[in-house]
Image (cartoon, rainbow, N blue to C red; front, side, top):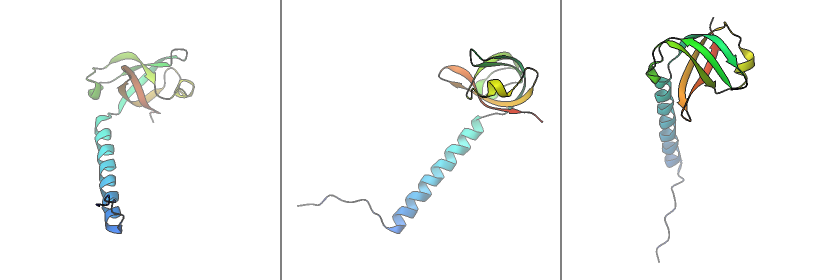
Length: 109
């Protein structure tokens, strides 16, 4: 009767698996960072009820979007209270659930 093979738990196998997972995570992080483009903008309107911020912004290359003024959903509702109309910001945006969404938002210095 053949016994089912067990996964190897040798220190070498564990180290090898750890290195492989680390490389995948680092690679994924680098890929996502390359996709996210930081863009400068200015807050023109905050609509807390709709969960949106309207920005006048520069080109957003990862969304193939020219410079314009438009509203975005926010990934973090706290931003609706933290920022004010007129604030200069740096942000990243992506399409989340089919809607343009601010994924990071920071005050510009």
